[in-house]
Length: 317
Image: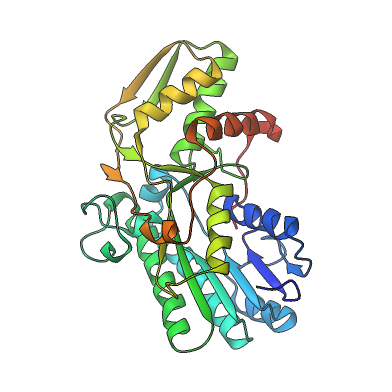
């Protein structure tokens, strides 16, 4: 990328999109196109086509998506599949038709099979069935990364897919009905500690293992790949390379917010994948390592939640 190019960040109000936008502005990129969902509905093909014909961005970051935790995915499987396919197809088709030169697609670790070797290498996707609780979202993301790659192979653009691990940070969604695990736990424990409650109930057994990366570290990895990407349109995992149990994360958060009560694990609720630790050999080969530890990151995240107006969720598209 160079600073004379026009850049479009799709999903600039979401966690990843807003972090990308912050980084672009910090680095001095001035010609940035952004639209809110009210200004541009990415599910309306004609509107997306008109936007791209008018703006003709050279570089596109596709960070817009319908996202959510286990409950949201399980109860809205069709919507997660359909809406994400619509967004991806509309944006990529319009970008291809209007001369976009570089396309960065944000994938998801949900693309990987429920049962596959750990740590998870990029070539493991589509080698076994998906995790059933997020199958609709995973299928959409696989379709998006394949389409981005096919178009790159056919010469439409320089395409790149990054696969982040579990993320958290500014712009995350704290809505109890749709949030991911880190945001859900922060909200639960901060609210309980502030209200003087003595019991917090968490979903599942707490035994599944996950790795957690601050969104600013993800974006730093993306920009490193933009400078040096020996993998072309092949996907690249970006994570921290180590994991912990959900129970361990809950204990860290509880300690940092001063919650001293009882933590109950509701085993009637699903756990999801037993472990989801990504192999980050490709990212490490270009020098990427996370700067923000989980301990420090959770302190920052807790403070962000305490400051958030009304403690409500954030728009993701």
